[in-house]
Length: 96
Image (cartoon, rainbow, N blue to C red; front, side, top):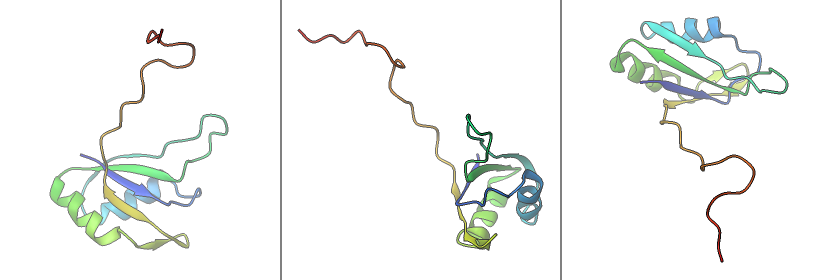
């Protein structure tokens, strides 16, 4: 399972997230997605912890907390949604 952390400052670093979430258990992984064009953080992250109990404690404690002058959103990450089939070009679904 994974935790979604939203409304993050662009200045937040992975080690800072690991330290904050580490207060609630063992942090296995921290991932901060970057924009393709600018390599700038996108303003959210994912944190994986060792157990669901630790994740629940972190979510309970940190959701709505103020950090870097922002109110962060912390909740259970949802599975990635499937996007439509092909990219660009024409599809094979012609209408006559």
